[in-house]
Length: 413
Image 1 (cartoon, rainbow, N blue to C red):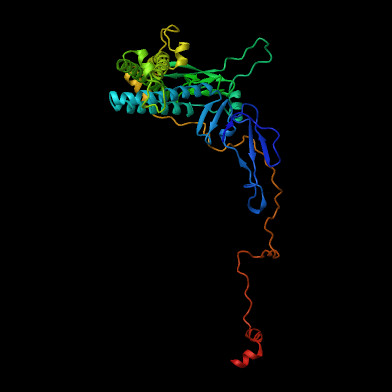
Image 2 (tube, rainbow, N blue to C red):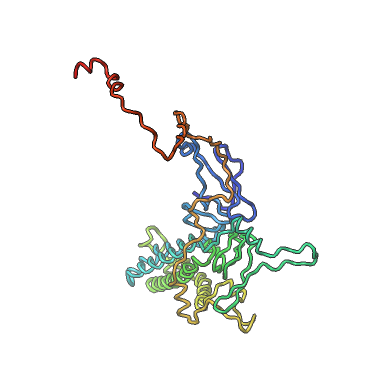
C-alpha cells in the first residue's frame, strides 16, 4: 500500500521489467512494469505488462497512501506528536472534567467539547492528507524545449555569462519575475516555491509545517488556518473547564490540598475525580494557548492582507523595495481577502497521482509481422482482360443439363 516516491528498486526478477526514460529532467526517472502469475497470461498465453501508477514512481521526498489518495511528507514524527497531544488532552477532559461539570453546571459542556474536537481533527487530517499544490516536473521534451529557448553561452567569448533564467509577467500592473527551478526543470508560477524538505515545487507555497506533516500551499492553506484557529479555541475552552473544575472541587472540599487528599484518582473516572488530571490538562492547554494563539494571530494578519508566510518573510510586497511596489493579489478589502481564502473555490490536484504512468521512451520488441498475415487457400483469381465489360455467358444446352440426372430420376418423372 505504501511506496516511497522517487525510489527505484534494483535487482528485479525476471517477471518484472524496467523501462528507463530520458534522464534530462524527465517527469519520471524510471518506470517499473510488473507481471505476476495472476495477470501475466493473456489471450493465447502472451504476457500482459501492467504499468505502475504515477504515485508509485513520483519523484520527490513524499509518501502516498491509500492508492495515491493521501499525500504526506516523509518526516511525520512531529505530526504524530500533534495527534498524541490532542487525543491525550481531550481524553483526560472527557474522563475527569466533563462528568463533573455536566452534573454541577450543564450537560452541554461535554457536547460542545466533542463538537470542537471533531472539527479540529477534521481540519488537521484534511490539511495533512491533502496535496498542497504540487507542480509536476517537466518531461524530457518540455525540458529540452526550454533549454532551446534559453540563450546558449558564446564559446568564442570566454568572459561571456549566460543571462539569468528568469521570466517576467505582469499581474494587475505589477511586474513579477518567474524563477527557473533546476530540479523540476520549469519556470515556477507566481507565488510558487520549491520545498527543500519535500523536493517539489508547490503553488502558493506558504511554508513546510512539521506539526501537520506536510507542506502548506494553495490546496490546503484553508484547512491549516482552520486547524490552528480551532486548536486555539479548543485549548481556551478546555483550559477554562480545567480551572472551573479545580475551583469547584476546592470549594466543596474546603481547599485545594484537601481536594487532592479526599478525591483520589480511582477507576472508574466519572465517580472518583481528582484535580491532578485537571492540572495536567491545564498545563498542556496553557502552553498550547500561548504558542498557537500567536500563530493564529499571525496567519489572520496574512489572510487579511492576502499574503503568504514566504512573501512576508522575504518582504516581497514591501514598499522598502520600491515606492511602486504593491501586492497585486490583494482585493483592497480585509473582508474580501478573508472570504477569498476561506470561502473561495477548491482547486483540483494537477499531479494525477492515481493515473497510470506512461514512460517518455518506451521500446518494446515486437515479433516480425508476416507480409500476408491471412493467406488464402484458393489460387489467385486472374485479372479479366476487359474489366469494364461483362464476361461472356455460356450458351444454354438442355442436353447437357438432362444428361447430368441419373436414369432413375428420369423414370420417376
